[in-house]
Image (cartoon, rainbow, N blue to C red; front, side, top):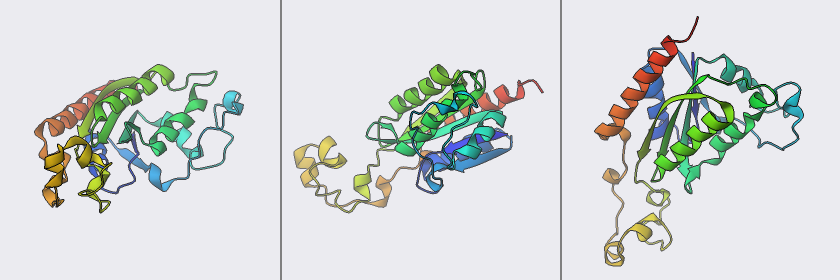
Length: 216
């Protein structure tokens, strides 16, 4: 079974559809965890997990530890906020700490990373890959990222007038002055980008092969 971590709060958004495609196209059973629906608190740094490899906090992270360890592979999907993995995704990664305390329970397990952002998705992908590889000794078989060029300014209602939003930042002053309407075609879908779909397909195949090679 593949465990999919969906770190986006938007149902059926680009990240949701991408991790669903990557997992589904492997042909293996998978379960998707929607982090936005859960109550997962930040690590409090008490290190009481040392003896049991489990966090003492009683929240929705507790049942995920067994699922993470039982999964043949872990797909971590994150969206990008302010150039970083968004808070609920980072909190999940942070709370995995008990699994490497004294015993490295995740060593050599399989993982993949999917990241979506308006921009900077590649850097966040590198950050999450580093987290899984360096701190938890996961074997990260691959990753895919998508820069949608779709800032929150397109949905807040002030995108054409706000002087501090994305459009005002990346457009020339005269271009922004003539930017008066946000239209549906400005919202990018990963399915319309051949290179991103191809990367998803490749990651699915790599993950499928890696899972198939696991000892049974």
